[in-house]
Length: 291
Image (cartoon, rainbow, N blue to C red; front, top):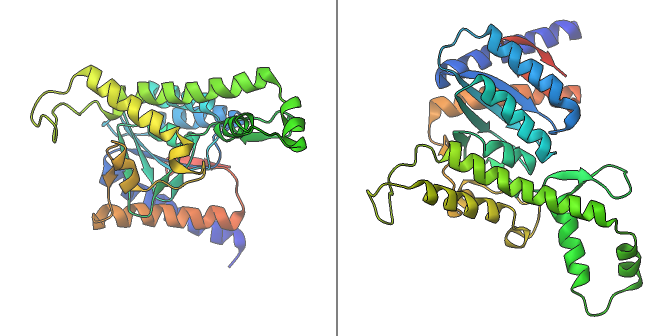
């Protein structure tokens, strides 16, 4: 078979799986594979606009199938502004993993769908490295500075490292951390906890106040930003760990119909993007894919 014909056939099956998932969830579905980077913002904005314009659904709901190693918290905030401009409800589906800024993105959703093998990660936005060579994990960098400055005896390497610090950029990293926590507190209280109206354990049956939602959101945000709690900024946080910090997850592990539809769509699309060596990919059956 001609390679072009093979790709066309694969994409046809992916589109059919996307339609199946849309009908099951009662929402538009967009798949986002790749880093959350400023250079992708216009592509994402235009893509969401086109999908919404072509959609004939009436639910005003978007489900985003997300697989990302993370990226920029600032870009995540802009992404959220885009999707909330067009959709009343936004849900996230994480069949594999969404790390760092991907976790921040998920916290803006009304629902987060995961199964037993899915993972989010501690929040750790990516910022430009001090030497301008690329992006580094902001919290990981701050943790390293804190570790060195607490030592009673500095090594020559420590001294060289500290002398090379750009205090302005160090402040920028601290701001990135604070921004990430602030975004989580705001979005969780406004969207994720919007349907949390009555206590189910402590004070069962009593109404949940807005202050209680905000306090719960603060606890979740602080825990997700605490690398000392997780030991690694690359730690995979499964459903059990996320529920332990007070986060509600829609677990589809035992929902055979939904699990089959999500994996049927995600696994085929993942296999295609991996085979093609694509670092970034947007997909919807309503619009040509963006690479």
